[in-house]
Length: 72
Image 1 (cartoon, rainbow, N blue to C red):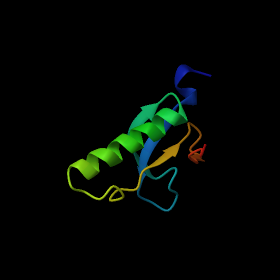
Image 2: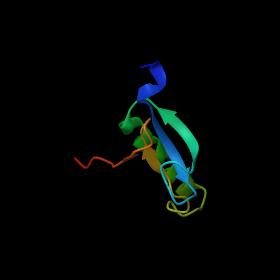
Image 3: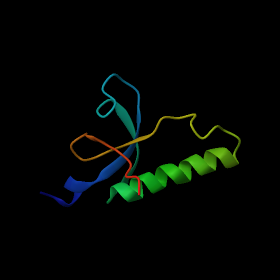
């Protein structure tokens, strides 16, 4: 397995299969980093006057599985 095999992506889904039909927003080494990027984007949207939920963003792993946010 190569270096890029274990990456997590923040994506904007647009099709029926949300984890495959999507636009990549950013790529991260860990799921925690990917969720932190979503949080930062959401905060920026609020600061600029857009609703924080105006765009659907999800995290997928390198095998196109949707990753759930861990609640601690």
